[in-house]
Structure formats: C-alpha cells, structure tokens
Amino acid sequence: MIEQLFGSKTRVKLLQLFYSNPNRSFYVREITRKIDEQINSVRRELSNLLSIGIITSDNTNNKLYYEVNQKYEYYRPLQEIFGGGVKKSVRRKVVGADGDDVTTHHDLKTVGHIDLAVYTGQFTRDESTGIDFLVVGEVNPNALQKHVDELEKQENKSLRYVVMTLPDFRYRQEIRDRFAVAIHQAKKQVLIDEHNLLSEAPKGE
Image (cartoon, rainbow, N blue to C red; front, side, top):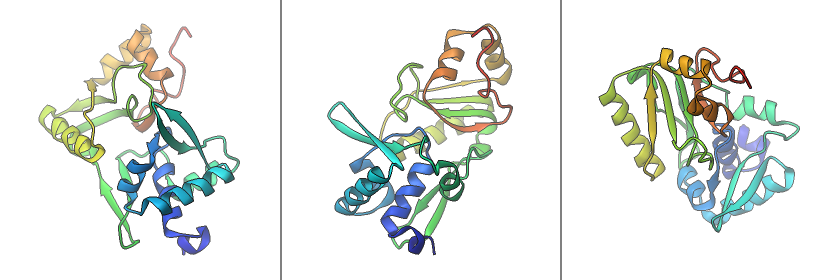
C-alpha cells in the first residue's frame, strides 16, 4: 500500500530511514548498506527526494551527505507516517530485503532506567560536544557496554559515549556547565527525553 502511494520500495525505505533519524546524516554507501538496495536505485531516489525538497545534501570531507529537510512543507505529516517522533524506547524501522517491514529494537530498557538518550557527534556531524552518545539515567554498566558494542558493529564506527545520573545532568544544567550547554546547542537526535530536559534553553542563556 505505502509503496503504491510513494512510487517505489527504495523510496519508501529511504523515507523510513530519514524520518526515523532526524538530524542524522548519511552518505550513499552507508545508505545502501542500511536499506539493502542497489546503489544506482538509491542514487536515483535520492535525486528525486532532493528535487522535491524532502531531503538536503551537504559535502563534507569529499563525501556527500544526505539528511531529512525539517523545513520541508510536509515534514510533519511525513514524519508521522515514517518516523513516529521521539520514543520512550528506541525502535528503529528497517525494511528487509524482501520488502517487508522488520522492526529491530535497540531496547535501552534492558540497560536500565533511561531519562535521556541522545545521538550527536559522528551521527550528526557536530563535534561540539566531543561525544557521539549521551545516556542519562540509572544504568547497568555491563549492559550499556554491550549495547554500545552492538551499536558500533551496526554503525561500523567506534563511538564515544558518556553516562551520568539524572541529578548530575540537572545540576549541570542548573549551573550552565559547559557540557550541558553544548548538548543543548548541538545538532542531535533525541532518542528518549522522559522529562523534557532539552525542551528549554539552559537557564541564563
């Protein structure tokens, strides 16, 4: 049904990838690996989405990166269809090679109680925080390390991460700690934000 509405299986996979990962940037070969489609088909559909204005592109270090255009006129309704917004547990849609939807879970609930989880750094091409993954909450260190190991394998990159308790993060926000301010200002993908910690500017700005 969705493929009929939106024209092709590859286009639907791309829309799912981009709208499930706002603020994330992907290069072509990374996209082909994630959605399991031929590079020529991916390039063609990327060109179509660019011409419509659904995605944007940017050249960094001789690589052309693509990400969803959040200023696109119909961003919100498309995000409702393909993204689902911020979730209390991380659910990433992946479309299988046969075209069927497969939902995989990077279930942070197995790590502990998570109040805030954020991707930045390599995920969004913003190095202002010096990290790629922030976790705030009460976590099991071994379970978190296993989660990060699996994430590194999936993303094919080494990740820098920081974990802290909710009182510690709130205190850092209160005193306008440099790291807390950097997290607020950074380009990021918010996976979980149970207490709307990032909804307002740090006090004093």
